[in-house]
Image 1 (cartoon, helix red, strand yellow):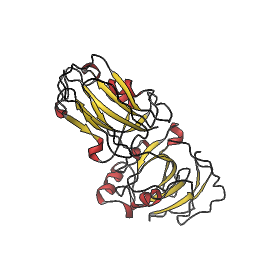
Image 2: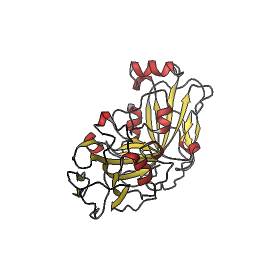
Image 3: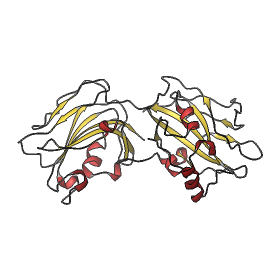
Image 4: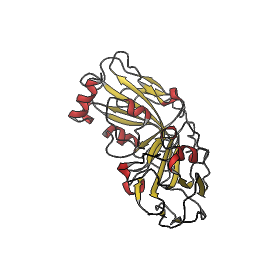
Length: 315
């Protein structure tokens, strides 16, 4: 269920990326920074970018265009953001994509697997803020440079420019008072704070025949729609055996997925759930992996699946 961010994934590079409303701030007076690029317009609206004349800068740089407010982003944070990308070639300087054109946001994880200029731009960025990163050949490995050239971008003559509007930082876990899901055969311990819940499914009780969706913590964010990307932490086990077959918590980072591209039990069970919620799902085989099961996960075609899911964001 992992997925790279929408605009970043469209770039000819391997970016290892992984709610609320951005406050509007006017950057019309923002001067050109070290790159010579001038970015104007309000945060949470598609930026207007003016490039200096002549050949592009082939050295990486980063700068803050709009400061924003609130907690600065830290290493490991997952940001809801709107990204606009340009290929700075000194000629057309075309944009291969913008989240504003797609009418949605995306998730970007702040970690040092990102190109250094992009990481430097995002680390310390605040909600409502706008940052600029120029990613040039000095930030890329030989493999990334070769891969980009195969896909039509030659970093010997081109740099990539990213304007990132930070909407919000996702929480680490669902927050609030937890209730008992009340499903016989399932035990759920909710330690609170940013700690992972503990799910136990060792039982002799028969599993429910249909999909069961129980809200353990009700979030206060907008309701997830069926066409959105979702950011979530989860643990999945098999009913009756307590066998764990997957856990984003154990990987140490939440995952993103298109709600339309996961098993039916997830797409049906999470549609309409408010962001910030913790939900228990019990999924019968026909809404899970079907009669074939999932051999890689050790799931048989007759297994009922149990998940505890923290819905941390939707875009």
